Length: 622
Image (cartoon, rainbow, N blue to C red; front, side):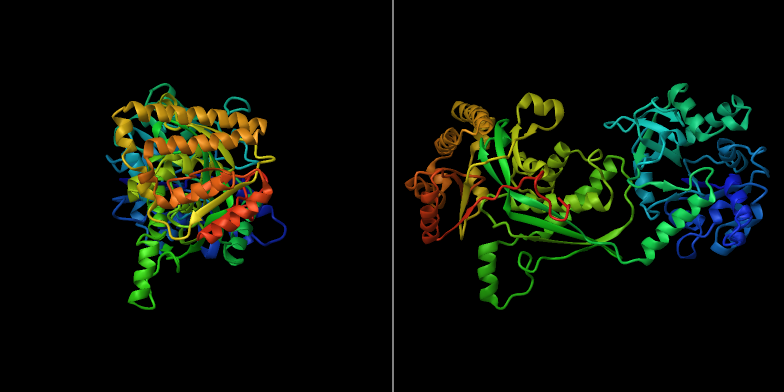
């Protein structure tokens, strides 16, 4: 592949303003082309691009196209930066009026150097907000598509779409369906702005001369008009890849644009280090319908503030995943200490969850056409969710980690919508780590609060996810939670139900239909705040579960907690895959007695604090 940096523009506005600036602060920049203006740490704008593309394993050659007016500046720059001087090409223009136009500049290089390779074209006088991005990722995405590639970004607030080339992109295929060069207000709802950063297939290069023959005026020889023509008239396939960060100093800019950018990034670099990003996700309890989320059923679940997982991400030179001192121990007091910890905690801490999430995140962004910056980070986690009691501790760590990564790389809800995010978290666990799991936990941890979920087969097959509805959380009744202080592996509870369901065993099919029915009735009870009815439904949910899973499968520990709750007249059910029970006790006096009974039986008991996302915020980082 060949890379061509275009710096043949005549920055007339900026030059005029520098010359007429009365402060004298910028007089030393008089006559300096925009791409060679000093940036951060003394680096010139063009230096950033040269560092990015100076990779022999990616590009066989890099060319620079400039004009006759500024040629000497770039020749001097080339000798000082080890850029091959013979690859600096002069287009012969000296003023804005006699410019060739960007497409003609590119065609000049292709024709004069007889290039027959795929080409990457970049405007070397604009600046990406986070310059150090993964150019190899861009090339891989281009190679995976049967057409050209346009890089775009989402306009920031205040940026007008009429100042940019705007693309409309199909979110599924990533194909650019329309290119509008500086459209008037109202012509498109898209806020996706294209910049001069393209990959063009070798077979498409011949189209440039056809286009130029139809555009005798240089004003019509912009890339925006070329793409409009290529897509609408020539019906060529053009794809889009998003950079989740903005661009500055595009096109004709003035001194204020330059100084504003310089001040912003100088302050950013010289100031205090970037603040750590900390995000939480919460444990959840399945209140109704479970375990039917993996069987095209319906469920209601709720996040609880009592237990959480937290991920913290900080900018760093290399990428570091920090083991948790308690959950990922590598040092022990003795062999007996190792034995006791391994017996109770198992061998699999949270570090594998961080690693799998990072791997899947990079894979997702690459596939979705999102070019990430090459920023590194240190990532650590903490959690107080008890292990192996079915409160979704693993998915909470993955969910919190994903929130941090999205924030760090500026990935928005448009890039990774909530229903897809839940699928992503499930795939981290099932595809990467082979953890048996369903969607319910991940959905409620992404949406947060009290959520009704419908996983009907028809909807899932059409959309790729279920139908999820957040519910009103005002005036909730007093739910409680108890769990075994030394649980067995919660993953065993699922037994052979999946196989029986796939075999369409009537008993199991009917039970799953009944779970969905109970969930719809519970939704009505929540709406009507009919807590007595909800308590009845919770008890029915448990009995239905016992009927298909059998008491042997549920295990003596779970059954002991169920029986204890019922002695105090409380509704009770399993909130997850086992190891804990969730209940609803409408008699406050008996709730106190029940707590004592559970504690005396060696269980941990707590009154649930529902986590309501609309009423809660820890540092605004949820």
